[in-house]
Amino acid sequence: MSIEYLPVSWQQYHAYAQQLAEEILTKDGPVDEIVAISRGGLTSGHLLSDLLRIPISTFSIQSYTDIQKQGEVTITAGLQTSIEGKLVLLVDDVSDTGKTLVRALEYLKDFKPKKITTATMFYKPHSVFKPDFYAQETSRWILFPYEPTEMISLIFTAKKKEGKSEKEITAFLKSLNYTPERISFVRRFHVK
Image 1 (cartoon, rainbow, N blue to C red):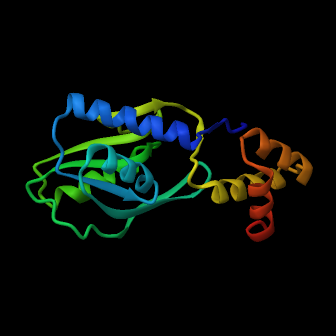
Image 2 (cartoon, rainbow, N blue to C red):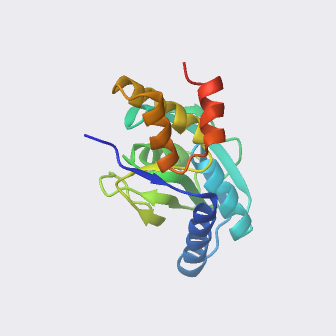
């Protein structure tokens, strides 16, 4: 089965962040602290921190090992900020399987926040966890604007295994809005 991709530009990503911020401010009220899940939630967390004018903290969870291959959901770096008694906005980039957000909520409850609200840029309908706020729903694999090197590398390797030529792979990557310069950089330094 072929993977369907959703390329997201920086402009679209900023628009989604503003959409989320407006919805949070309108429907949820004040928030004391954003806690962003690293790595995926860092960019959206940073944008929401600016839009909501509140501080941000982070902790790390690792799970994906490849495109559409999720491994064990593990906390790899802990939260270093006190959130006890605070109204917390937990942020990630996507609720894909939902396992990362479930694990994150379980982890953060030990820090005794007053309330945890969740927000993601994207929500996938097959997820076991639906965030309180999300900007878009999709079933496609999202190509975030902040990880082109990783995605070009993964797609290039997968297409090569399918027997595609470098010319075919490059044409496909261009169809996903990756520039020839970015593709060339990744092929030069990151594709074996």
